[in-house]
Length: 129
Image (cartoon, rainbow, N blue to C red):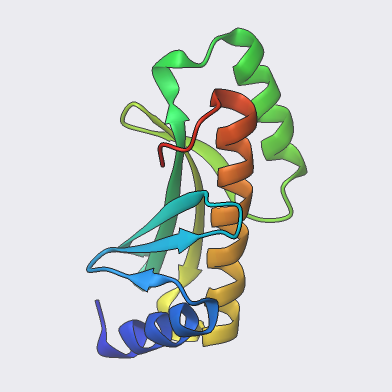
């Protein structure tokens, strides 16, 4: 991870009062729920990108009804998407590393964490992720 992106992450987490780890951010909400947003880096067509993702629940527990519900939700999302990573149903968004501002990253982190936490509660119950 570049030092610049790390600095932007630190600023975003400080404004949100969330905890920044080595490769994740822990969001804590007033209702005592929480959500972990992970990040990883990759290149696409020579452009460095950051992939942010957070687990909603166990994808192996998603039956046809839940899958259809999740896909309907994914279609309505203003940005980001639902996806499967390994055995996990996740919410994911991708940002260009060079162009991200603390405000943009703060908004994306909040959106991912809050939306995924709400989906985790409605689709799976509990607060595991």
